[in-house]
Image 1 (tube, rainbow, N blue to C red):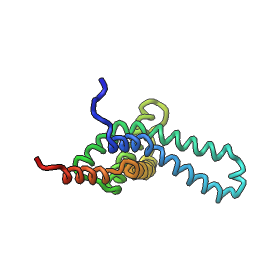
Image 2 (image 1 turned 45 degrees about the vertical axis):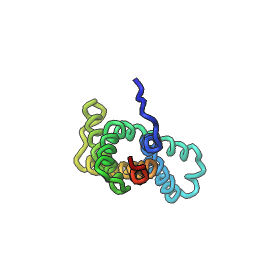
Image 3 (image 1 turned 30 degrees about the vertical axis):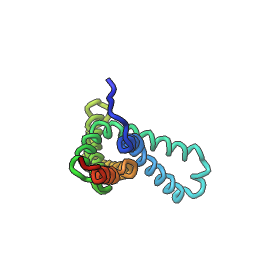
Image 4 (image 1 turned 90 degrees about the vertical axis):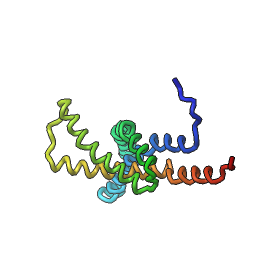
Length: 167
């Protein structure tokens, strides 16, 4: 059954944040790889449009494939916790995203191991993957904050309470 709760601007921004912010790390990594390839390979790198398109599409795909499950399973509870306890700064959302990203990487390795798709990775590989996952999660958390802007939600709630007529 559908909820009869009206869609507010805050809810719409949060939903857009959950949908769009997970793509930002993949786009950022694709741009960094493309710029790095330009410096290493010179202008020959940019002559291949297929390479640039492949980098962009694969970056968005991997970002979506790994980011959306984490966002929908763990991001929503983190968002509710942060808003309930009054954490409204970009740094809080970036740190929450970084924590989720750092925890997701070892879980992903262990999942592939359990499915028989890979060997058990060494501890340095798990740690380095955790650092990459943490950086991508922090970027996604900050992008979510930029879209959802929970600090503005608090301001509009404060204004609506102070401008309420007395009974």
